[in-house]
Each structure stands twice: as structure tokens, then as C-alpha cells.
Figure 1 (tube, rainbow, N blue to C red):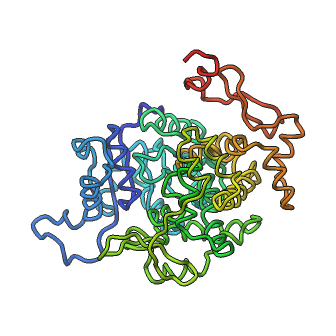
Figure 2 (tube, rainbow, N blue to C red):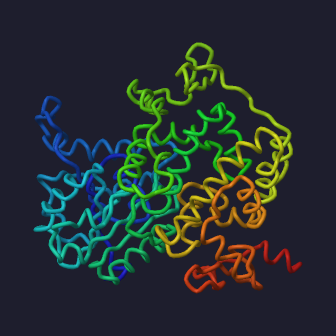
Figure 3 (cartoon, rainbow, N blue to C red):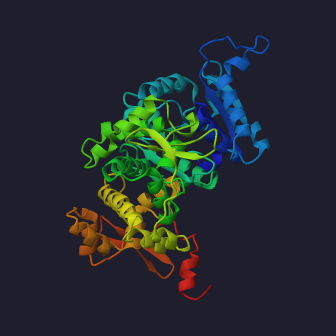
Length: 475
């Protein structure tokens, strides 16, 4: 099957991710069948039209799409591309589906039960994928029929699907390469996505690094006694990250969701040298127990005072809220007027002030961790950088940040602290290279860990870099 032959897509699961994926597919012109389970009770059933009850979850998702802000769909007219249904009445409609995307609860037993349920109804060349955020292909396909495994792929969309560029694709040992290629082409050409291939490791690439980084900082604030507002101020725009940075991002994602992803790391990455940082700190467990799970609950690390409309920030040691501080340092003042992200991040990280302390400690640990994950989670640095730019909206990926701050300069400071230099960094420097990327005319080259040579980055031929033209005085 070719990408242009994908006409009908089925999304299994009408929750936040399933509904968001369906909306983006419909907005890009695909015909989508959105299915979910039946509600538990018929107390709200419409006797005149029982389908209103039986399709309740899918219909509710469509209503959320209609009124979502920012909009999850390109045009209100595109909503007509989504047909609601349920797992009991509409499985026969899967017979002409070209791609089936599963987006149900993150439990292997629930997912596999659904797979077994749909197998009798799908055509022989239909592609099946899971939107899991971190469950391994091997676990999802265990004891499943070989024919199913041959056309099963993981396609991890990031939320919200319309706005987040990244799709992580994981294929398994039995997956037919042509099916993977078809999904790659469809996601890039039809959905406007940036696709990266990830290895079948826990939480793949973006969440493995991004969530570990978040959890690491959540432990560091106790040790260093950093106010959460200070951390968010420093680790946001000044260093090329979204303004929501660490704790505001956690509130937006949901602390319970973050806990689930972190728990996967803690349970399945037992040999990870930073495993202790993946374990949930007690204050976070207490917040979740109180249902202070973030934006959806009205409070998390931050909340708004209903009487004064003032933003309050939590003290993780006491769980008391206090008015959010305006954190200012000399380096932040200088960085505010710097447009170039590389110059800006250097201004903050190397500063001899409180912002510099926070930025260096948090970012240097992330850089070392990312370097140690290659080749475990990816065979090349390019996919790692793309994952963090496209999945977490960082302006610079980890290895691009190594280069921006200076590989040798970082190593010198790490060595003074008694920290171990990651092996990939040692290999880079022993190969007489001092950066992970370099320019050769209009081509970007990257350091390949297998050949220990700089290779031309694939897929950039269609990209015109204005920075390169400026350096040649052509702009």
C-alpha cells in the first residue's frame, strides 16, 4: 500500500489523544471513523435515538473538537469527516479501513484485548498502529498472530496532534518495511509531521529524555532549595524552551499523566544511571493524592487565587501556596534583549549568578544524560535533537546545545566537578572534532557514532538555511 492509497482511517479510542488525532486527520482531508466503548449505564440514554447513548464517547469527543481552544481542527466543515461509532456496533466498518490507530488506555491487557477483537474485521493489507507513549512494540505484540505483527507499528503522536510536529515511529522485528514506509510518507506528506524512527526502548526518545529531565529538576529543587518560579523563569525562554518550562508544563500535561510516564521509566529502565531521579518525589505523590494534578484540576504547582486573581506557587517542602515571585538576575536582564538563542543560552548558563547556577546544573545534567542514551535509544544524534525540538518545542536539541555552549568548555567544567564525561563525547574529541555538527557550504554534517566520521545529514536538501546565506553575504 502506498501513502496516497490511505483513504479511510479508524481511530480506536475517543479520549484526549484519540479525539485530537481524529481531528487532525479529518482536518487534513481523511475520512475518519472514531470508535470507543459503550458507556457503563443507560441512565442518560435517549430512548428515541439509542445511538446518542451508544456512541456517547465518540460524540462527546466531536463536541470537544468543535469548541476546542486553540482549535484542534483546521475548519469547522472538516468535522463532517469524522463518523462516530462504538466497539460493539461498528467493527464491521473496519473492513475497508486502510489504517487503524489505537489510542486507548495505556495498559497492555486492554490494548491486546482490543486488537484481538478487531482482527476478524480488518482487511489483509490494513496497517495497525498504537499511539502508546512508551509501551514497547515487543510487549504489545506478545502472543499476537504473526500476520498482525507484520503490519503493526507504533505511531506516537504528541499532544495536541494538530500543533505538535513530532511523530515517533517504532517498528518491530516482524514489521514489513513497506508498511512503515507508507506511514512515514503519509505522516510527512499528508499530515505535515516530522517523523523520527525510535528504537523499541521505554518511552522511546522524546519522553525518555524530556520526562527524565523534568523529574531530575523536580528532585533538584528540594536539594538546592530553588523556588519553582525561579526554575521556570530560567529554564524557559532564556534557554530556548517554551515559557512553560518545567513546572508550568507539568501542570498543563497533568501531574498524574507525568507520574505514569515517569513510573514506566522507573520500572523498565532499571539499569539507567539516573533511575533514582525517575522515582516520584514524596511531595508530588502528596499533591496527586490531594488531586492537585495541574491545570485540569484548577491547581498543581500553580493556582490562581479566586479572590485576588493572583498567581500562587507551591512550596514543595510544605505544600503551602504563596504569591509567585518575579525572579530577576543580571544574566536574565541581558538575555531578554538577545534574539539569537545560542548567544542567549550562553549568557545564562555561564553566568555567575543564581540563574547561571540553575541553568548549568539542570542543563548540564540533561546534556550528559542525553549523550549517554546514544546508541541505546537512537543510533544517531540527529533523531535525538529532532525529537526534543519537535516533541518538546526546544529551540535546540541536546547535541545542538552541546555545540552552542562549547563541547570542550562543558567537558572542562564537568571534569572540575568530578563528573564522568560521556563516551560519545570522548569519541568526538578523540576524532579531532570539537562539535557534533558542522557546516560544509550549505550542507550540515553530523558526527556519526558508528563510523566516527562527520556525515551529511539526510533530509535537509529541501531546507534553505538563511543563516548559511547570511554567512556568505547572500542575504
